[in-house]
Image 1 (cartoon, rainbow, N blue to C red):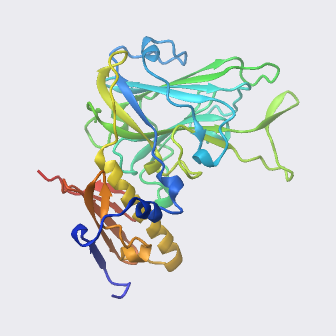
Image 2: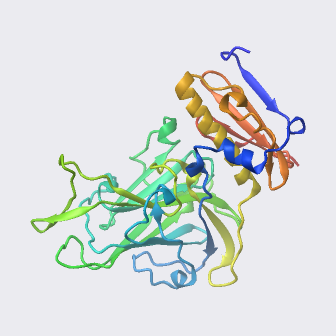
Length: 374
């Protein structure tokens, strides 16, 4: 069939043997860093909202657990960070609350105007995808001066998205507390702490406020940008290479991306909301079945992008993507069916399991639920 026509390739489970463990590993070969299991965090409910002052001494912060320490953005491929960073979260009926602890012996900052490019300083960053679609997501950056840079992205940069920098997250509350002094190389500091209150109304699409329910799942990640510095004439300056250019920054994150790019929302961690009150019984959380199915949609996406870069068109057959057996996917002992459709300029891949729910991905990396069987 000519590649320039619409392709529709149905891979029927009953006609193929399910992938063995070794086959499943082979289809992901070369992309393993993009398929490590993301971190997850359960946020407990609170009616006693914290005072946003950066001190982290409110009762709620004593009742909820710290996250794991941050890692390099590429995960185990790179050395562990030299300085510790960790976060906590909780929520009320109106806000998501975030606390961060940033260990730093030399606290410095330069930028003081809102919506300056804050990652030119050392900073702490939050990335939010409330709908778990990889589109219409939010980014917040803050430095040790508590200068905020917030933006909205309709879709990732890789898919032609452009950041809406003039957009501001309405009624965002932020505070920073420095444990030491700022911009003083003569002493050693302990670090700085960050406190944020994000209104659900301000990260809801449409006219209605979308408040999480018990069991709701968001995608979220946190990043710390850290620059190597030297002291010159009593001031911190970025360390430079032999040609006088600043050395690349360190990117330390909560949930490793597997690539030096925070704008792969599918790689962010999972934020699980529970109505269980903080300080009471712990709530166990396992990833929902569709999150496992989506791995195979992302596999098709990455392989399609590789194929398009080489052939200037998308593949209409899984065989062209070296996914000959991928239609017979066994996830937790259950068979799934995969469908790929493509033209030169677009593609859609869908996956369907025993519940007959159809999940899709397209060339822009948009994840959608296409039906809702009874």
